Length: 68
Image (cartoon, rainbow, N blue to C red; front, side):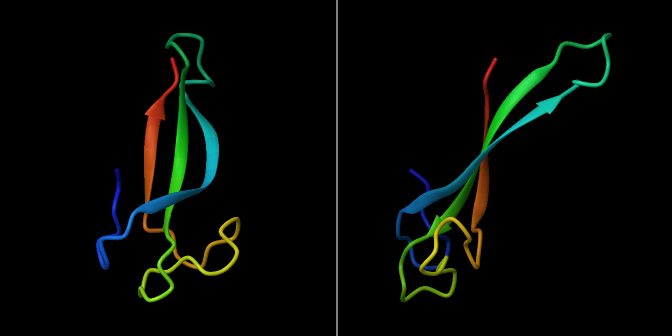
């Protein structure tokens, strides 16, 4: 589990996007990744995402997971 570097609270995924590598060339295999924006939900923290987690003020980090 990912934790906030400032307050050590657990982080939450605020947004997930699907990205691709080598999608514009037929010579290399296309790779797909999920990118998860991680935010702190502790209102006492300097890295707090804010009330609207779909539109965070601060994104602490991003996790990238390969799909295929």
